[in-house]
Length: 281
Ligand SMILES: NC(=O)c1ccc[n+]([C@@H]2O[C@H](COP(=O)([O-])OP(=O)(O)OC[C@H]3O[C@@H](n4cnc5c(N)ncnc54)[C@H](O)[C@@H]3O)[C@@H](O)[C@H]2O)c1
Image 1 (cartoon, rainbow, N blue to C red):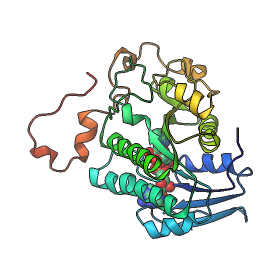
Image 2: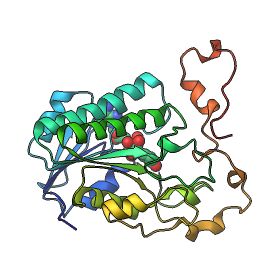
Image 3: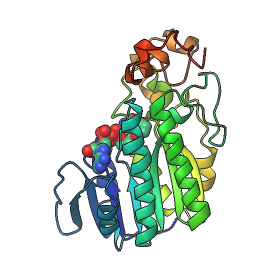
Image 4: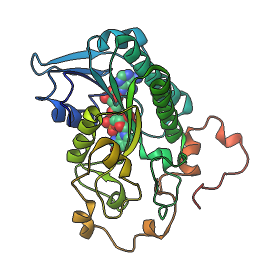
């Protein structure tokens, strides 16, 4: 395993996952650039805080100057109006990759999502190279995030790792998390592996703890990134009912996906007749 790169930019560092990534790299990276549109404070002279919006390409080019790697978390992390997802997740990721190219950054780690394949049924074991099957507009935006990463790797030789993040929580707090939980410790493990794995061109890997009931394959993470998760949500299984309807079938994205989850964000949806069926029925 190679060393953690010297200067790393973390976008979206003020959100739910950002502080864990920051703490997980602090001490090993020589310098962290903490970028968010929300205010963040540098704790000492090993950190620089940058208040910037990822829709602002020149600001990103300036912030990325001299960086060895970027870990890109910023964006909208859930279902939202499509225009907003296009702006924050698709245009924002384009800007991050383009700024990385212009600033000569070697590697970019993209925070994708399990929602890219959330419409596969729970009994289907999904490999990272299977066709996308997003469970909503947010998942569609992350398909575009991954496609942008692939294009920047193929066209410009940027090293890109897209991590399909599971359910990031301190501990599992709903039945679905027995399959989808990503512990903070494994989250850091995946990010560190994505930053240091040798020979990367473009890699997509699920970032999920080693949950016995998971439905995502971890071969790409093991082979291409060299990381095997250490936690397993099964340790918390006694908190949840064995016969929860979630295990009877339905989409991997869970009950909060499908038409009822998407339509509230579709403009003028009330004027459209009929309701589409859930993909994984
Ligand atoms: N939380 C999860 O379980 C989970 C699961 C799958 C994927 N992800 C992905 O991981 C990443 C981080 O998730 P999170 O839960 O920490 O999200 P979050 O919403 O808590 O944090 C997102 C951060 O991005 C910043 N941000 C948003 N738009 C921005 C913009 N235009 N310019 C600059 N900064 C902006 C916000 O200020 C915030 O600090 C996201 O890309 C999300 O899609 C998260």
